[in-house]
Picture 1 (tube, helix red, strand yellow):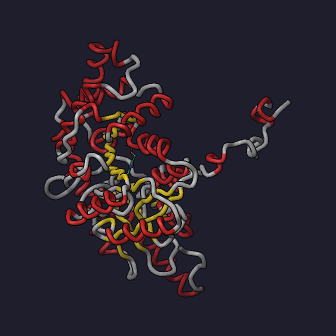
Picture 2: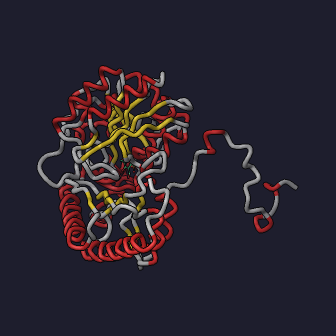
Picture 3: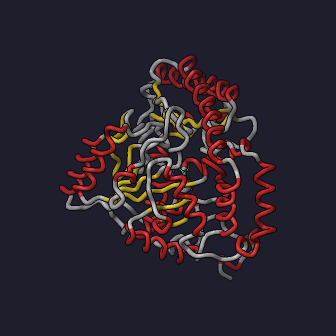
Length: 425
Ligand SMILES: Cc1ncc(COP(=O)(O)O)c(C=O)c1O
């Protein structure tokens, strides 16, 4: 009897197929976030980890009624296969959404995806051979790092500051890549309300970055889940608005409507778009018609712009609670970013305090965050923690930060008594 045929109770805990996986699967390991979700979901723990939108703020009754009507009136389409490029009506509505960020796209340039996460996977699938260089910000979105690792990319981080990606640092990274005899496949960037750093690429840096990429023949992947969730003024102009040949734009309804519908999209130059459709076809045949028509109906029949304003107000209040609590309670040596939108604050810890080593002690103190190490391909980032304020209400945020501050104070005490831990990067 092989291991695969044994009843579950007798199976070994070690993996009998360990030597048989493709090389690309060897690099697939659970992310910091995944390992945390189970523990952080316990009600006694205030989770500043996650990254989930506050979907309870949606008009759930109205959405439920809308979905009922959708099935009653268009069930034959909503419950049927569709094309891999996605529903044409939804793609038209996506053009309206992107117009808010000055992107003038034609529905034919759009490919609907299963959240923007699938777009990241498809892009890696069509561009990345093992060892290919992909440039990303330092730090970068954990899900993108996972997608690129799955195709064995050589991920190179490019420094940011409070104004986002630093153009000179991008030039330097390109110079070094060329000096190694390599050519980067693309730059992956989250210009607005960055996950995890909470910073936004300054308007004055946008054109210089596009110019650098154009000169280098480097494709830009602009991932923009949070662009409409800014707390002040109008949305920023998208990079794609100024370069429709050199930029692939990724959008999603996860943060502006509902993460559970799993609807995102990519806008790409024609040849890349065709490859994305072929890659999507081989991955899933087509995406959920039901989800796509749900989003299309939502955008057609519900006050979606008003709802985005409601979300903005809600998240602004939570951002304010976070920043107030941080400035009142964090011990000296901590520093943090001040997001103008989105979900995240990037917290720098005092010298010698290790976010990963501290996490179990934070969880014992009933507060959770994501250690910075999850956002670097090389496992550095140990001096940082990502705090997400989208889910807890302001009181819980304050209490969570009070608990976290007290854990950090204990770590400082330990450091002073016994010396800093070794190996923090
Ligand atoms: C920067 C960024 N990109 C992509 C995603 C994936 O979102 P989804 O697949 O739900 O569209 C997220 C989710 O948190 C994100 O923060």
